[in-house]
Image (cartoon, rainbow, N blue to C red; front, side, top):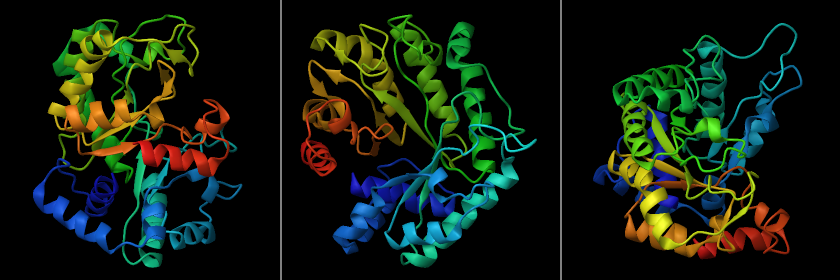
Length: 325
């Protein structure tokens, strides 16, 4: 995983992304990782919310960025625009690029020239970039039954996200809609595994068609099979359903060259996915051969203590996740 993370970050600095198994970039990334101290590896594997480096007036606090850079933090994510500030509702592409570029400059100044990578949920167009083209949610795209249309939407999303200086897109969402009580049903393409597979592959190809942005397929795996509709749940699932119903969209996305994957909030048969060697090692890495970047969903390592309750401390949670996956 460490090599995959550094590969993505290194490529982001040059605004040129290629598939994760490219020999030249993989060799370069491995050489960089081999030179890292333990502290540098830990920092590179840490992703920080942008709200922690902003002032109250939504300007960048460069001292905070510098402090994180000195701890070798390798990634940032999210938007600060949960609510308007005065009459302003968000940043346009130029404003986004200025902020992200400054974070990058400070990061590289402080940690030996190693860049950070910024990720954003551009899930129906670049929806956090003011002035970008906005599409309907994925369920609307699913209703079109048109992979060419979805591919084009991916291209436009990539263009508008990259224009904001952001190379890492947290999409597509490859869940199979199962329970209408689930609050994220509208983010799925369909209840039909074949349709999700075809449209998911088209979206991955669109998102990565400019070779300047990388897709992050999510949320691996079975996240939508919630018996209650809750966002966090224990899912009971046999191997047949896992492999024949939920896996095909992810397999197709990997074959299409998806550079990264995000795990999810659930447990499968009592085992949290975030600490599951069966799901993240055996299935994802060994059986599927995925060697790209694997990222946790929001604070999910902490949730090993807070929600799953299989770790007594956050330190134990980190240790559990890293040693098991």
